[in-house]
Amino acid sequence: PIHAGVAQGSVLGPLLFSVFINDIPTSLLHSRFHLYADDFQFYHQCDPDKLIDGIDLVNGELDRVSHWATVNNIKINPLKSQAMVVWKRPLTTTHLPFISLNDCSIPFSSHVKNLGIYISNDLSWSKHVDVVCRRVLGMLHGLRKLSYCSTQSLRMNLVKSLLVPHFAFGDIIFSTSIDAESTRRMQVTFNSCTRYVFKLVIFSPLDSL
Image (cartoon, rainbow, N blue to C red; front, side):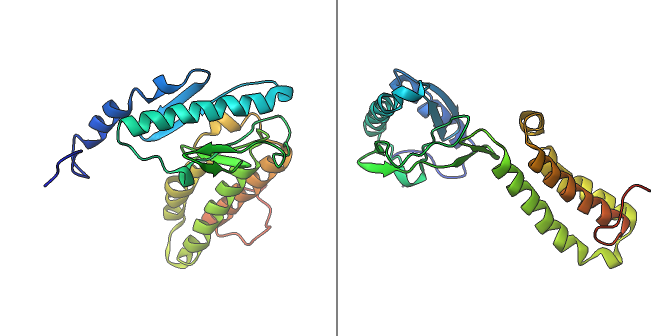
């Protein structure tokens, strides 16, 4: 018998959880937040010369979040938590105080995944582009094995339905600010998709298409 909570997979489960966790942001005193289902993120902005003070404030926020979780009988897993210092260029974090949750240190990450988008600590998109290109090329490798028995129309539909969405997902966020090398990698990967559709050999020019 279930004495608390709701059955996993139930229709009302996600809605009831959202209602239950909806007041967790009230624990924050100095930060902005983003809450989506069970993904809770908060942000604190400070000047670079006040970074240590900012980390102290973040640790205070985490203490209050931990208290909220204890009062509401929720366990927060520090191993699934990440911290990141965002700046226009990478910062050395080895000298910084630890960020901790429930007496467990949370390591500083160079990038985090936010709803399918990889955000780097220097606000570049190289990591996200790398993930997209690797994923598309991996899928393309599998599709090529079946190209001998597929029509051009089928290959076109496969690219549109399976591969193009990886390029398009979140493009409104990163497409106007990626660097030249990331743009080149995306173009090279997309060209590989085009060659697959038209059964062209690798490095063959696409000018005639």
